[in-house]
Image 1 (cartoon, rainbow over the protein chains, first blue to last red):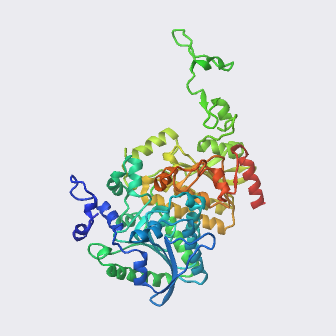
Image 2 (cartoon, rainbow over the protein chains, first blue to last red):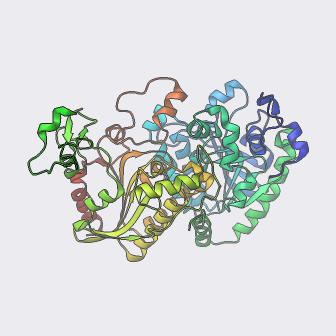
Image 3 (cartoon, each protein chain N blue to C red):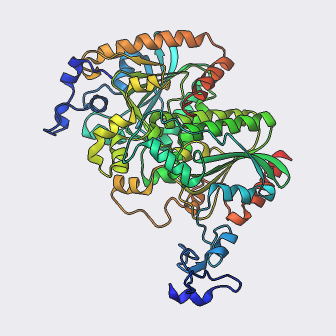
Length: 288
Length: 285
């Protein structure tokens, strides 16, 4: 995999203070970019890409999870529902957003809004950006696994176009729970993985400090996922990464959304469900 | 272990060495129950499907024993037995994934962590999948995902119920995001099963965690578990590290999930077949 020299120059290489390592592994650079403190988050894209965004709250059962933002909006005069994971920038926001780690009520809110969109035949756009679903006692008590599982099954039968974009960290099931789209895109410097590099390193090397090695082994970059047929496209980012020019990144994404919304809107409800099923059904044919 | 020498059951032959010296082999004859800490004659334990005859605690059984327990006469027809992972990532940890697969295939005599079969349950044709926790933690990669997806399609085509017995640590790290996407693939196939209005019963056994719980294991028309099984999304160690406090007693065990409304029932292993049979009778007449 190749990395634009300009981009690696602006990558936060200082985060790896290992003098013996001249430059971090390209996959690890992507992880650092995907988590860059200035990287645009969901709300940064929402305000640039949509008009008339009206947030709607709550799962109608337990509470409202601020790690997931959902709402009704327009994309270039076309009504769409937006469901997104939101991380938070400063400490206060991070706490409010729970560092972008949704709880079951967040996933249930997401599903409620997607099904609302389906009822009125509006397309759904989801933005994925989470370190993972929240691993805590309360989340387990309220059925974190059930909430994610249900989203996977129910998203697969939404009779409307669904476009999912991994804009930063695609943290395992916590991201996939919003990611069953007809079209799944990744921003160029986003990562999407079954496990965080730190946790992976803790398990296989018994040392979470070897996250860089794990990041390389996990094949979590946009190019990797595209090469395995797991995503449908890569949205280019401005030189140096989206944090250098959020406007540019949003403009690039706009072009992709327009194109895929046009294509998918031509399909009937049955065809959309069939299209999504066929796409996921053939994922991972790596056996002999 | 000399204490147990005299408990040798009558009829068991003592091995005689060439020198004529008599020796008693006691290794592996006894097992300590994890529940009541009592020493149990291993054959008694096995005859009782690894449920402690003294305290009723359930220890794990392998995928084949599970199928023998649930299928009429222990008979079934296996599908996709040879499907094996091609190591798409070229993953290397403490040893290459390819080597790990070969070793595990040798020791378990299975190609991957799940057995997919057709059999009969109290005379009713069913499709059944059984996971093997000894195969890389019962983890789900492309092979497990594909075998379940095919089992679902077969069940739809033949219009039979489907039972999946889970025992898995979750998605298989060594196949990266490919493992992750199996969650979506299987859940989408279960959507079709749901639309076809065919019964799917998920049986959760120790342990069922991670991406397996967060996909097919929680999507049954009924989700039922064995007593005392560890069931959750995040593993207990991950949660402890995140919240930095000790977890309450019994957290993420079957009974805890039942109490919190996440399971339809907790059913002992020896009553499982009858529970399944009655449920299928309700669903399918």
